[in-house]
View (cartoon, rainbow, N blue to C red):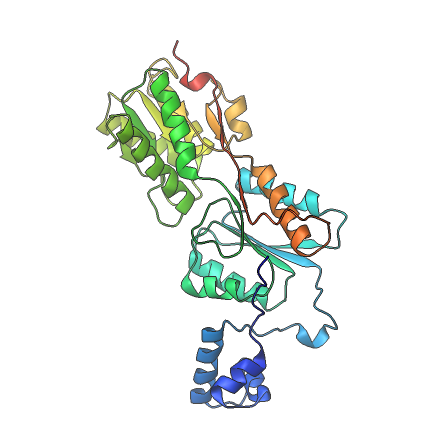
Length: 342
């Protein structure tokens, strides 16, 4: 296994600028007497080298801080909650605890959180997805600790990966709807660059419908992530107005699918008699809705367990010689009442 590059040190920054390490330390703190020009040069050098001031260094006698930094886009998403549960349960019994941050689907906020977390010297860092700012990628590459990107299959990967193809998951659903005899199929959601996984699902939908020779223009935005039931209902109103002959709809999540289904019922449409509805994520609401909602199970808890396994292996807490740096999980189609032909 290749040796990971060590994190940049304060002495590296000092050497590049031609000042003492004490000057670097003062320049990177607020309210210290360092000229603005010297401060600018030092900050530029720190950025170039990927150096992050270790605010906890004075109190550390070793490199073991006992926490893993985990960054997710949303704290009210059941899938990410399941991933955190899997990660936490797998780490139980080790000396590691989770420090959690959330980005609200904003990669600039992710960059800020990464920098803040690295200043506390985590033993590993976990990020959701593979889309990052250039500086965030540099910080992660030079962190000198295990980095795991999850819920996606980024190319190139920074270090370790546990994820799946969101586009492939959409293909599974489109093929199911096609096999059920639906030909006029719409898609709700995935229109914003903020939710790259939702965007991949939308792209996967377009690719799959094209391949089957179907129309692929029935696309409706569902609002900024995280998408709610209300936004799914509003998007369904728009779709029914623009393309009233639509036979089936795939939604970016189960929550938007539930909202879309309730809008159909309010409009006097039977589900699945007049309109088939499909979701994504296998939330509880999909299983217990009436009718129950066809969905995609991505194995959210298993992703967390696999991430934890990598961290335990990389930190030599468990004996694992597999050395697998990319773990691909397989989404699973769950067929329920909302798409079955009557």
